Image 1 (cartoon, helix red, strand yellow):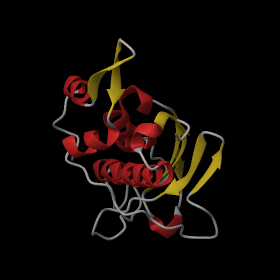
Image 2 (spheres, one colour):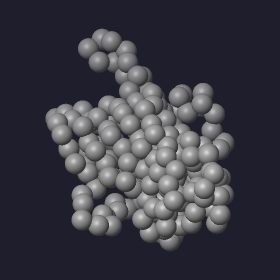
Image 3 (cartoon, helix red, strand yellow):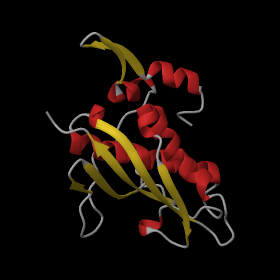
Image 4 (tube, one colour):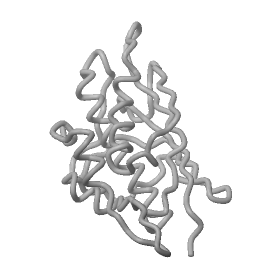
Length: 183
């Protein structure tokens, strides 16, 4: 688990720096540096697995299509939660989904510090009948967004169970993100 050793206090302290803008002291989130501090690397930008785009923009809102758990230099994570995949493994898969979402945000925005707010995540969990821990699985992505973006990463969310997902992945997550206008 790549976030297990960090405390919420150390996350907040390490992810911010103080700057002075027109005589006023303010905290600024340095998101890309935060990834490095967490020991994380972004996977290469993925490609759509069908007839759709990875993103769609409406003004400053960026809508991200469902992303899959694709680790760096490893096969796509597959399996059904509650059968071949444990809750812990699915939570780790959701972290990989989060890193892939961040990779797409960076490609679209150019700079992760343009992220004003992660507004919403919608998570789908490929699970056996009777499985009820979808929120715990999707927390893998939610916790990553908070760790990387601080309070800007706190979002509304849905976590839904389903009997199948594309390519037999255990979790798929989409996002709505607000970006600062480019300068």
